[in-house]
Amino acid sequence: MPPGQLERAWEVLHVLKGLQIERTGDPLCLRVRYSVLDYSLEALEDALRDAGCALDNALYTKLVRALIYFCEETQRHNLDSPERLIKQSQEVYIQAWDQHPHGDRDDTPVELREYK
Image (cartoon, rainbow, N blue to C red; front, side, top):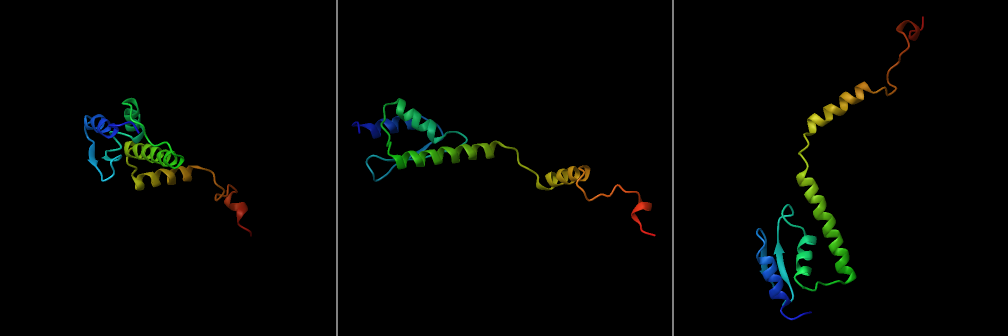
């Protein structure tokens, strides 16, 4: 690891508004809290790499990062989507079902359906 990397990472992240940064007991680790609407882990890591910080590139770390990227993207998508009103959406499906020919209707005239 390059010397002074933790201080450099602190300086890079400290200027970003909305981030909460804490030092941990580990001399090579910072704890960062942020809103997924404002930042993403991928963007923060890119900023650190651009500043010359070396991040862990072990296979396990890459898998964890990929999972976090996916989760954050899904959270942002869900938070940006309008809230669905359950009752109204069910009524739309009911109306669509009523208009759809689905086999529970008999088009045979009544006089031919009744056996006499």
